[in-house]
Length: 94
Image 1 (tube, rainbow, N blue to C red):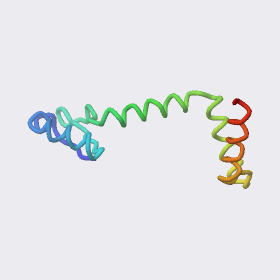
Image 2: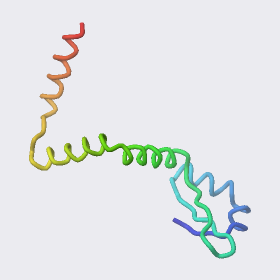
Image 3: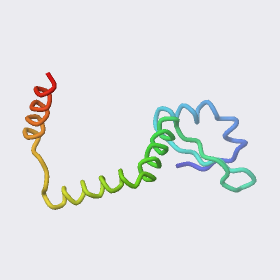
């Protein structure tokens, strides 16, 4: 992450936007020497919003915690078991 003054950001906005979009760079833009705004990609912003939604949903968090505990204790399924279960469910709906 690079920190640049707003005057420099204005002069380089096209370059900065390209780097943010292509390389997922982040830029902190300062105004009067203080960090004021961040330049990030829309994709990254959307991802952060989705993460915040997940973190604010207690039921989803409980499911994630349970999944981690299951994984840590070895309570998992093989890929073959998952495929077989999906096939079984598919055949029931046909």
